[in-house]
Image 1: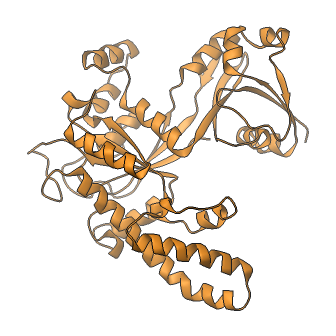
Image 2: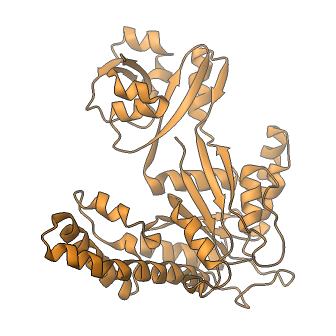
Image 3: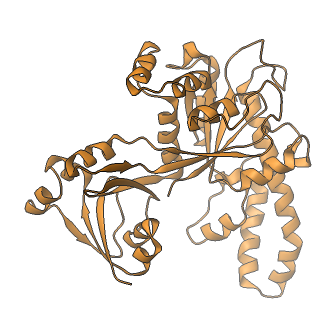
Length: 366
């Protein structure tokens, strides 16, 4: 399982350039005018994880299969999108389908690239998009109130519970706060997610800076970082231009040399992925053998059967147990046999909470 992030933002902030770089394709046209992305382009990229290579080296796997991340390049939003301005309706429909939002903010000056709002102000741009999402959520929830009230008066318990959540969400939105700030109990979580609120999506702000600021950011990105901290959101600095150049280099050594010359130790993609994993509270476990070593992604808190189901539904349905080795033990003791000899291979049952880095072998019967 990978996860799905929608790349959003105002027109001409670098969304499609970033998408092209991240997926190393030219499937999204990057042009200097609004709405150059009409249909959402989708690309899947490998999640870099040096642990996979170290595991594979020990088991001498014939191939490595990293886990995947999906990016969706969504049409640029403009003020009034919640009322259908620009490609607003399509934008809102597309964003409803993603797990998280990568909100690209223009944090660079360039007189040759127009800005739909007339000047560079990433905080204003972030608020523009956030406001449109909240207005769309308000309209959506207000339409549901009357039918739910009728059902609730008739004694329908589910409608009463949903109505209570909606009323709290509406109060928050009317105060100008996004739905993701709503305090929801574990019992309410399923009902809350069923509302499919746009402003409930977790947000990662990607500050698109000029090449010279790619390592440390600039004054614009510093303001975004401060805003993100106040929201409990994530922010990363990235130069879409640099990412585009890196993606055009075929040799890994050449890429490393290029990044080093710019004072960068890794690509922006790696930073986006790391922040995205943290944003969605994801962890990675591994399977490894002579044929292949493979990385798998699950949400933190997933139990062993659910994790087995990511590999194949039969594994979850007929789950018996999981032979589990912690990553550090696997590396320190040079693989499975060393861990067995040292008593570091564990037999875990259905209630085991999978941990980041676990190397697992599932036993099942169907």
